[in-house]
Image (cartoon, rainbow, N blue to C red; front, side, top):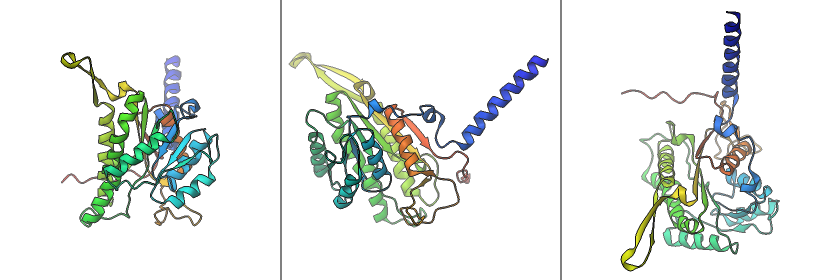
Length: 307
């Protein structure tokens, strides 16, 4: 009986420790178990970042440059991209960091030109990582008050432009037999977010597309005229990886303590932007399919009425 008591006590202590660790953790268990970046998966690789002129994108550029990545930075504001480039340090930074101004709403022809240019920046190699970080986010507004203009603007950047860029870049990756899409999604694309119905909808769409992309079939043809055989395989079997990152509340405050959107920081605990990027790079370097970045002990999601 005494042995059984000590075994039970030990199990209770282990369970309590795990629950405590979960309560104070800033990411899911799978992600946190990886602990460190696999530098060999980043160094000398070509990484293309959209939305790289500020916020998470800027910090991604800094951390990846320090890990020895070859960077391509994209955003609409070329002046801000140049500012970011000058601040970078690393094996290829800042001298060999490429600036590629890009507006995701510019249409397929322009996006195709951007893809071809990105693929040609580093002779002999193409884009290894495509980090979809650009996003359109407006202040919170109720679902019934959102305008058609805001609806279209959100989906044009967060969904249509991102998907189009992916569709145009994927064939290049398939020909090389490798490529990795890292998608900066949001916890809003997994759980309801009052006041962000349209933003949440765009992230749900993004999550659905990229999780489907991973298991899409790719058809190749072998043989001559009458003996062509369709060889079907999943994109993941052709070396294409997808990592979907779902951050919760992120602290992106400037010196005044306001977030980049200009709103006041709430009392809920937020993961720092630097930590979010660190965990994102860890997730990508380990090829994780989906990760959550958020303090687990924060406020619960809003309860949905069962009408």
